[in-house]
Length: 278
Image (cartoon, rainbow, N blue to C red; front, side, top):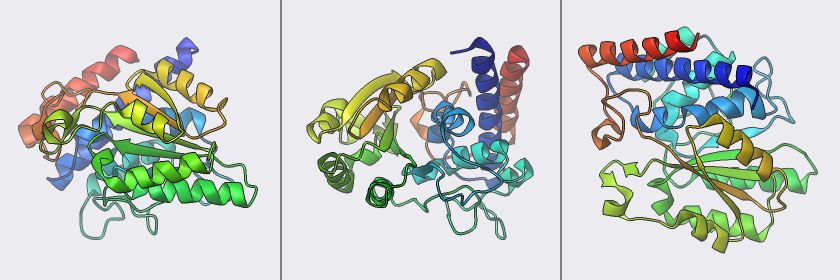
């Protein structure tokens, strides 16, 4: 990866994290941990990889993204805002009456959102349907889905995976945010789906295991995905709460908002990290 591009992506991901914290703090609720963990994945997809146009969000041949782990909406909103789909000032209206930014993605009112999600396990099925539609009608857009490692405990995920593998949906790439924490603890404590890669392989997917907070590995994985004639699952090992010291690898920040003091600490850390990059 070009050094200048990597630096710019890291700056953008830091700004995305700041937007996540701004939104969740303003709402006094939300899910910061799993939003912070996917900042690099979403940043790379929207700023480098996907065929999209913020000025034309409904462009027919655009690539689609389905945030199957819909509770990580603050991350998606921050990326969309920083990409130019809507003004970043809206991020502080998260979950507030009258705001377009609901607690989970809403395709009817938010520019750039391709699928309404929130009920875990269902988003990947929608992504599979989109990919099937593209194949059926001879369209060349790609579909990307982002799932949680806790979410894949849902049986519907594997029904969708079975179908995608059987139909050879090579235009579908799914990222699994493997941060090893869900609302009640580690995935091992709750109901582990490991080994995740082997399960997807059993459903005829190509799998790649990466560090999901590393832009170079994300880029390499997506380039590999384009050479494979089957659906691809990228198992992205990430740090829950990445970028905010007291949130990192802390399960209690799965679904809690920082108070004013902790908000200031988080923003101070992120601003300091940004200053070092610029």
